[in-house]
Length: 285
Image (tube, rainbow, N blue to C red):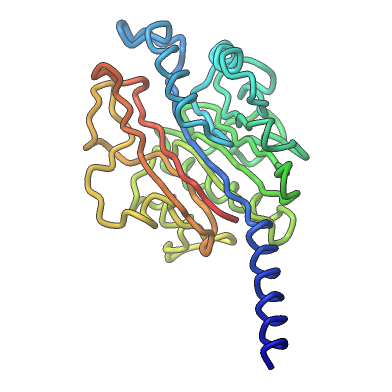
């Protein structure tokens, strides 16, 4: 009897060890880094570039979704942090204008597939729709963990700041594309949504909208762990205030294990590194 019990315990340990080995922990960051050409005086890119690079070095995300990133800013970040590969194009379809790019640590992940689509009725070509103030895009990547071989998708976007119609239609298109990924594949959606927590785009993403049903309901990683937190502002206008609007998110499918989630109130020497705070999450697929 003791021999059988010993064998069963050994089998259970092997199963648990295998399951643990197959688990995939991903460190995610979403960051609106503010246009590098903006006339921000003391907060100009040249005065905050090294502070931001130090922040990224400290956080060391496995995957990083950037918003308001211009080509030269991405180049400077990657020059300082050469471990990061890059996915994305400018919203002109080439190299001009804002990128909603994804940086991924090449020591941890291999790139399998990637693409960019426009948030419009004609998403496969450069286009602007729904009353948006700007051309808006979503960049995506399918990545493979070099150690476990497991794969996941990362989608990154920056929704319009002016048109409520564009924001809602934007998330509808993004969730439609997420629903078309390889069946059952894990995913994460990052971005500056320019939308508050109870706004129609967030309600739609979370499956709380009474109208059209989202094909892929999601949860906010931060609220999953900090449901009662009050100082949750991610937009700080370079004033370093924590009471601003919460408009930056890391979203995952329900049931995804969220190990940690934070708003990085990084204020070196009391100054803001961007007009947004970065948001971070450690998730397990």
